[in-house]
Image 1 (cartoon, rainbow, N blue to C red):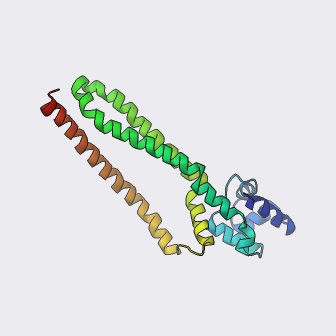
Image 2: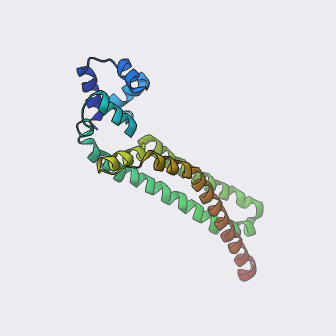
Image 3: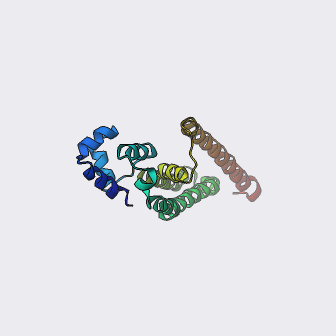
Length: 196
């Protein structure tokens, strides 16, 4: 992306060092350095503040980067996220289907392969989380939405952020209940219908 280079050029044109710009932006010098070296990308509030500080339009500041952000959202990271998501679901599915029969066949020893599957599921879940954090996908989406003439007002954005923990807990409880019901159904079928 070109935003890092533009921030550096605009900072130099104003004869400011990174510390001076950081002070105006209410961030650390390291944050400015990370933006300029493209190790991280400023969030929407920081981009708006940069636009005001440098006295240029938002279009001039982020020109060309919006298309690249859309590619980032829609390309490699999404593919990785889909892969990790599919692997996570596969582990959960295998866990559900194999738990009952394995328990009936080998008893408590079934916890070893089931534990390995559970650890794999957690690994893929963590990888998904890392991709989200590294690429700050939510911020990119906010910027793209903003540049397309739409935006969430602050209240709506905070409401969405506030819902996330509850949604996560609800999804986890629901997934646990469904997994338990399916596991016991498989055990029942194996024990009473098949006769294992």
